[in-house]
Image 1 (spheres, one colour):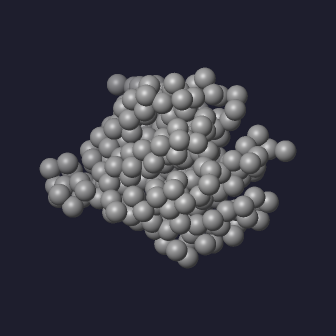
Image 2 (cartoon, helix red, strand yellow):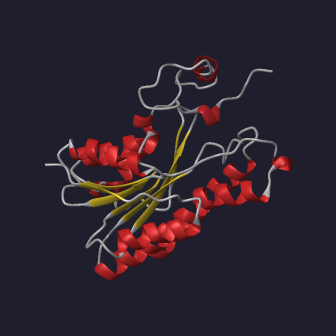
Image 3 (cartoon, rainbow, N blue to C red):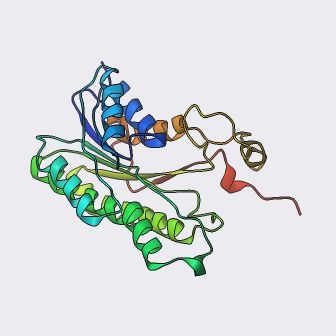
Length: 252
């Protein structure tokens, strides 16, 4: 018996990386999963893998850089399916360049994926939860780049900062309905689950007191915590999962 038996969770960006690992961790606790990603073939592959864990899974491809696609994913999930209990807004992306070199297209792409689509999906989730009396969960994903800037990632960082503000505001408004909204902010992360160590891992680890870069499992564990019955009184929070990286002060 898993602690999430009988629940359904939508995890965006769940065809690879942090999203795929998070979906698997929720599934191992008994949750059935709605997989979403840009490519239909990747979505189907993830659905097959998650079903192999012994839960149900369906796939809904969507490109969250396109506002209409975000609304379509919201309607197909929260209006078509009978009951959804968990939304994990994991999908995210960053275009790296100096802030003065960004174009309007760069702005639209990053803002749509990183903060506008999570807002659209959270609106739909909130309405679904309230109209069905579901004490649901919403978990957003931010970044260490909010309290400690990434180089060449101004739009990504400001969008993720918006996710943290959104988290607090939504938690305040949804608290009376027993709905929680929280956020997980990853620190310096490995490229992909199970990937071979990259050249940057060792120098990056030297700046992290815990002595290694983050793993997808570190983030999945934090997301799972916010989805468990035992954590229902925790809401409006951003949990920085970074091995104390944000506390690091270089010698000078």
